[in-house]
Amino acid sequence: MQPIFHAILQNDLPTFLSLVEERNSSLEERTDKEHLNDTVLHMAAKLGHGELVSKIIDRRPSLVCSVNAEGNTPLHLAALLGDVDMVMQMLETGLEACTARNNNNDTPLHLACRSISMEAAKLVAEKTNSVDLGELNFAISSGSTGVAKIILERFPDLAREEAWSVEGGSLSTLLHHACDRGDLELTRILLGLDQSLETALNTKGLLPLHLAVLRGSVVILEEFINKAPLSFLSHTPSKETVFHLAARSKNMDAFVYMAERLGSNGQFLLQQTDENGNTVLHTAASVACGAPLIRYIIGMKIVDISNKNKMGFAAYHLLPHDAQDFELLSSWLRFDTETSDELDPDVVEVYLDASSPVKPLRSRFESSVARKNSHEDEVIKLLNLIGLNTSEMVERKTRKAHGVKKGSENLEYDMYIEALQNARNTITIVAVLIASVAYAGGINPPGGVYQDGPWRGKSIVGKTTAFKVFAICNNIALFTSLAIVILLVSIIPYKRKPLKKLLVATHRMMWVSIGFMATAYVAASWVTIPHYHGTRWLFPAIVAVAGGALAVLFSYLGVEAIGHWFKKKARVGVIPSFARNNSDLAISGKSGYFAF
Image (cartoon, rainbow, N blue to C red; front, side, top):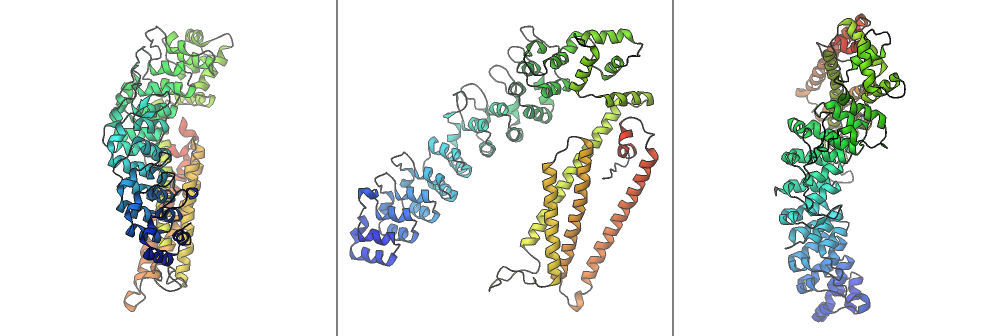
């Protein structure tokens, strides 16, 4: 090996410069084949010796485009190393090296995406004059979404090229590919390009949205609702709607999300049939997607259970016999097709009441749902399927005896549950705000920090009592609020009582967090307010205003809580219906006050 390579290996800049001064042609030296026939620039780039790379490029810029035995240019090696400074200097000298391919057909962009520094890859993507689909595909598959975004912004036509293979072997656009993979970030980038990519069809005639529905990715569906809502009105070549696709792929989350977000368009789509006349209920039954989704579709009362397709089959005809809960689903799907009576809970209640004198009505009900087993067992199974239970039947009898209307009770109950959920969301937001404020105060302490010396970055007033109080209270407020957020996003109760217990705990924790944050603010005010003769009154005034406001607030809340408690004691046992088991709702209809 030549002496100049020894100098590079040792990163000995003076020796290197002296050798170059003695014989300028030494810059043209190469290693032997055992060492890949590298130039001096290859070796310096491979070892990450940035200063040597700079000196070599200054004296011999043509070496930037030189290749070694593996076909790598020095830019390939610098990109693989992820050294931004070396990559920048080489790009400023020879942009043509960006498109050079080594013996493995890799460009510098390929190798940069494999490095630990995405900044180098972004730099190559910003400077290169051309990028092909292979490079874009590699950037996406390697998780370099930021690099892919730069490429697509510079070369938007790549997004429309059909060269992406998805499941089934069909060619599609990049947006199809992103939706099929469930890649939210890439989908968001592509929908923001304003290239009408959402209207592109793959070779099977499917839109990108259709693949997102088949996958069941709710977050991607949300992106389409926000940026391309008209896509939901499009049909597949077999005239299936997005709801048919969600039912066929058994994606209940996607189905429910679209039904709730699309509004009147969703109701219109739910009533559509495919080319064979199948409704979404036919599709759901044919794939035995399960009781929850079938129950949800029937409960919406938009799709007629008795509808028949072009072959003359109703939904229950398509239900596979080996489906789980076949008897229950079959009974549920066939009920309206066999009788003219709707499955009304009051009718079921009459049937369960053995002493009822309404025998003709009971016999009609028996003829529609009874099987070889006892009729009562079959009805109880139906009740379990549709979500009713014995306690609800008792409540209905009580409601009838007191003349309480079913609709108003359900509305009140829904309002109550919605209020609890809103309270949960509010506590979460408040906790996040407290955590943000406490975090900002922790990294930017009151009084400032030393700018120089051994205490650089440390608080100037760190030894004062007020600062110690601030630090303790601020940390308690921060971690208490973080605990609230973790609790609320980790535990999501479905029923009212567990949700209320969770809100009680987090409500108390929120007051603790707010209290310590207020204390930290007072302590910080003591640190930052100058203690001169003319400002001594300022701190007591702040404390007096804050204390007075809190005293008034807590007095008002105390009076309301006491009044609420007395009303509950006075009304328990008097109110019929759901309110009997929930006295908060019974006595808070006007004020809307819910005690935690």
